[in-house]
Amino acid sequence: VSDLDPVIHAPKRLRIMSILNATDSVEFARLQEVLDLAAPDLSKQTRALADAGYVRIRKTGRGPGSATWFELTRQGRAAFRSYVTALRALIGDPTGGR
Amino acid sequence: MTQPNPETALSQMERDRLAVYVAGDQLGTPWWYWPFIGLAVGVNIAGADLPKAAAIAISLTAAVAIGVVVGRIVARSGFMPKLRGMPTPLRRPLIAYWIVCAVPIGAVAAAHLVETTVPFAVLGAVSGLVIALAGWLTERRYIAIAKRLADEAGLTT
Image (tube, helix red, strand yellow):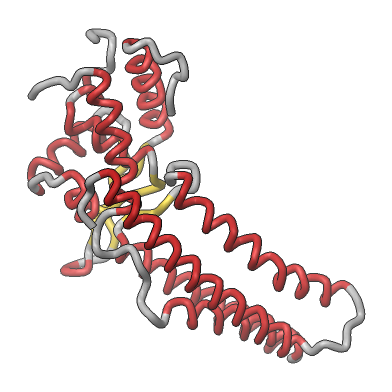
């Protein structure tokens, strides 16, 4: 377990990475709804992923109509794939996963 | 923060992947969305009967209008779907939709290549109708499958 990427292995960040890996991009409110996280917590977790180079944060619009979108970077997708492969190896699943 | 054991983590990841596609109040599009898409595509095709400059102007206007509306719908749903990340049962009706739409679009392409007596106005009307109706039906099917998947996974819709 200690070999798993510590940035991704935190439960909340793992969930965020999992959702972003299944989509092209996700808006803040949608991510918050699915994860049922408080906004400051979600901001903190996505910031940590962005600092690691795994997530790109994009802001659209201005004022009340503004939105924040998240998407995985190429590095983030590769890191997530490696993480899932390592996780599956731990439980003896040879498929490697997605 | 408790670290998940591998089985729990994988199970939660699968649930979250599903949730983004099936949970929430924004699964469907507004009632006018599919009629609009059908109209825009139909007008675009019908424009081929007009002089070249007018046809190009109509084509550009339709493309921009579709782009703006689709952008608004994506913003409303809060996520940009990815076919590879989509649960398989949800992917199937979308693929079927593209196959259905390929028929009128193929007919339009063929009409450009060979001499035909069928006016583009007629091809545009038929294509627009097929695209709108099939789109609407596909969306109903998608929502029904999404609700079933959400129920099975115990996710709130």
